[in-house]
Each structure stands twice: as structure tokens, then as C-alpha cells.
Image 1 (cartoon, helix red, strand yellow):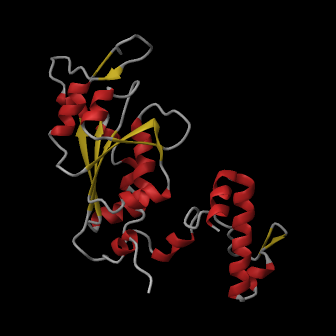
Image 2: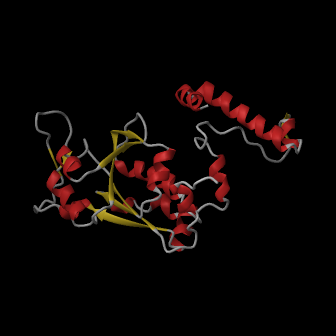
Length: 247
């Protein structure tokens, strides 16, 4: 008997009343839902599997110019989002116990395991930074978790939020047509995914590997594993090292 993980328990709740909410804090609310209003995500909204709420941070500015940023203490280039404005937006919308996420290059690297953990949350609050980010005091006093999508810089957190939400929402029960396909994706076993092929069998004089036509499931499974290992070893030595330690 194998005990189910929290994620597997969440998957077993198909048809329940559980619905995940993503609440976006942004200076550009018109950017949403954007691509999240298409395809699988639109269908998920219609099925009430998830929903999206927008919070316009600028509405929480208190001066007549609705100022949301100011120069950083100590000097330096750029502007910084004001702590009083951002904190007010959070305090008036976030309920006790809900996770608050700030997408920033200095955050912990976001990965598939974190996406799984967050897919168990009922509400996720995502702060989309602009300029040079937000005042550190907001991060500390509002127990904000910081995540990064990688070692690169974007012009704002909104585009990062699309990717962040995509990775989480697609894991929810009822989103994908075949729930088992999640188990075969890259990173699920610590390896990158093996090559995939479909019809026609011969295309531009290139043939599908014979093992995939054999009908021998054991051989196919072994071939796919060996391909995943070779690709991971070549392209992601960091993942390969972790995989070897576990195996």
C-alpha cells in the first residue's frame, strides 16, 4: 500500500466544490486575463475549476496624482513601488492564511514541485512588480514569498505571472483531457522528457524509431528512459547530478 501524496489527493477531488483563485495585484489590470482567457484556461473558468481576480494597485494611492512609486533611499537608478500603497492593496484584499507571492529575479527558482505545492492552495495572491520592485519592508511584514522564473529580467511581473499561473492551473483536476499525461512530462521523474513522434511514419525521409512500432511496452519504456537520461545528461547536468544521487 502506497500512501497518496497531497497532490494525488488533490487530483482525486475531481467534481468537488474546490476552486482555486488567482488574485493578481498589478498596475496594469487590463493585461488580464489575456492569454489566460483562451483554450484550457477559459474552459476551466467556465467549469469553475479556477477564477481570476484583478486588483489595481494604483487605486490604493492616497495623493491626487495617484503616485505609486518613488526614488530609492541611498540613491541608485530607477524607482521603487511605495510600501504604503502596496501594503494597503494587500491588506484590503488578502484574507488570513492566504499565500502572497512576489515574482522577482532574486526569488527562489520556481519549478514543477513548487507548482504542485501551490496547486493545493485555494487562493494565491500574486504581486506583479514594476520599476525596481517593491520596498523590502512590505516583503518582510506581509510574509511574502519570493519566486523567480529564471536568471533573466522582464519589464514587469505581469508576463511572469502568465507563466506562473499556467504552470499551476494546468495541474488542477479536470484541466487536462488526460490526467495521466502529467506523469510523463519533463521534471516529473527528475529527467527531461524523451523525444515524441506521430504520423506520418516517414516524413522527409526520416522514420519513426522502430522500437516505438514494436508493440513491446517493456522495450518502449526502456528506450524512453534511456533517451530521457541521455538528453538530461547532455542539456541539464544540474538535473542529471540530482537524478544520479536519488538513483
